[in-house]
Image (tube, rainbow, N blue to C red; front, side, top):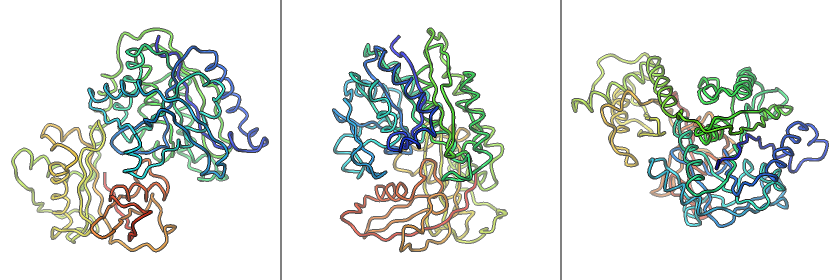
Length: 467
């Protein structure tokens, strides 16, 4: 077998840079890490592939560092002296990218040119650095590839995992895949994020599903529950499970604890034989069923957007609604963004900040049609695609200039940046964007503004989001 083992690990920085008494608070997790390190050291794996949630994040694709050696430190936590450097595996990355291109899964190599162009950090994030430092002894003599997941749907990430294993086999390499990620961040009022009942419920369900090897429940969690839980590990695990698609395997929970209000699961997957039937078809079907259930529950606002797209694609007619929507903004000129997603991620997004059409109803129609036909990043949507799309509609408030970035909150406010002829907009409450720094970095990159060389104006706005 090319894939020797798989692991789920958390990434609490305190285990690397904390005092001894702080580390002892996570004694179960530390003991599990020591076990994983010993297993790595005794294995004959040549390559370790680590999936991290906190590196450069793209909405519509995955990415990987492409340098001969990859490194990082803990300077963002005040410990620049704690560093690490590992040998990368460029030949494996090239072979993997070839497979992703064949399957039309966006996978970007972050070479020096792209890092400079998008003003990205070339240092590994803590989601990679924590496990790599804790497993350092076990990694000696092995190459390490670090992959940053994108905000892609479950079936796409699972399929990417399948390609990892296929590439190992094609390259005749023995490898181990590690999924870095924490579970809920809302387990305790004493924790940094507070308490939500959904967080405890999510972790209980998820740890139970992993312990019992119930891959369907690991992949398909109730969307509202997952969102309220505030986890950062599920997508890493989706890729890990995809890597094991070719195998029958057993799972073992090594530890679970959450003394700081964040759920830390450590577990292992061990292949026990070849799997003759791929799970991909079943996963695709389950994903389709979820989309149809979602469509049945969608709001009248989104139903208007969907109807407008379908009519335009079928009959080349722009629908003009005769009945007003039962919303506060009905009949008013209002900024609107319409976003389309399919199984591969974002499929189209277009909008206006202040409103162009005479009414918000007509603005929704116009932006929905443009999202389906005019987004320059994508080919136009086909008529038979419409019932496979998830659609969201954001109605924007008027923007207000921001004089202090501490006024921002990415879960509440969208942002607009302007510098001469350059401008960019980022909607609020986007999955995977949790900090002001992430929000600003992404919107500035989107606008092509280099904050070190160019001055810019910053604005914030709120939205009413309809599904």
